[in-house]
Image (cartoon, rainbow, N blue to C red; front, side, top):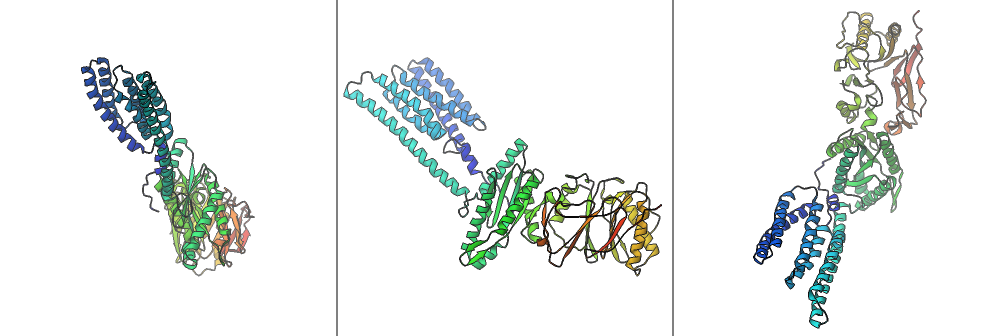
Length: 593
């Protein structure tokens, strides 16, 4: 998703007290300061020539301050204070000029300039509050200046002044009110999506930038969500664009009905929407989006004789975990959105939910790795960084891989340095196949016997793996029956277990051998599949949408991952041989005497 910079029109007008933006007010104020300062120099000279020395000196001092203001107004953050500092003395000066004994009648016309300047620079409310009292005082001074108003001539002069000032104030007030209403309508049109009534892309971008700035100051977090309606083009192509508009309006109502008052939603374009969820934890954001996904999928929209059902995919990014800038957050959310689409749509992908166990919610922060069997090949990924912060983990999650056997390991270093060479799972070739090994436990001081296979790193786990393969290579060959190989693996595992903790996963791509000494559990899922929730409540997986009715899905882990399923916990010494998701052999090895 492209994220060009948009000027935040709404925020700019909210910060501006008048119809002018602050940048325009700043320019106008500098121009007024320059004109007023120059005029005061001329008037000061005339006042001195007329014998009003103290007035002339005061005007010269005022002009010096105004010229200083021309320079200061370029960058001052206190523009409003400068406006008041200019208008209040200026209006007071108008009154002083009117009070002079030999004041010209024309001096009173400056009263009519008060509402013009006040409304232009301060807006309707503050302009009224400032200008009205000064105009009333100016009217009183003019009345005093006229003296007796019993004559028709004096009464006409007074009424002209009063009516002109009142009409000027009323017309400007009315005009400013209508202008504000018209401007607000234009702002709403510029920031609102005409079809759905939601914020448009520019408005959403501005709100996102403000949210980042506010959270940066307060230390609070938020979640950014990008949502896209799946196969929306099909609705337009089959039922017409009016049907597509009808779907977009209904989806918009669904989003606004479910979200909180503190949340924000906008239409980014086409069938794509953006959501900002304030003060939510990653787990809560995912639960909310998964609920929205289900609500959208369950909606049955009547349209003429047809009934429309759509699904949506979501991508979730958390501030500041996945970026501190708007562009980075949108990129991460986009990545998880399209991960969901590539994995089959109607998905809610959370980067945190997929990787947080490695270094965030658990102590296993010393590297991670995963190996996917694809036929006889293996697609392997390793990183010495914690999976919760690994960029390689992002790559894996944005490229969903179909595999019949996958072995993943998140490391907590016991033996060996934290480095790439010591990250599991380990892989070697034997008899024309790749063998993959992962080990949980500790056999301190273990060294493999010399042989064809040698460890690259310094872990006891890799030394065990090399020892197993050297033993198999010496006592078996490619034609040895699988049962004989498994018998040897059981014997070896039993011997290793006598030296320490030895929880093992070993596969050659055709089968998977597991052995437990302390912790191991498994679960096998078959049709009909249902949803399952991880123990940290961050991820819900709908296995029905991930599989076909003929699939069998088995998961072998150190500890049960979900809270709403029954896991089969291994006994100490128990081993199992898995193939195509099912146990084909098993047993319990008696401990060595």
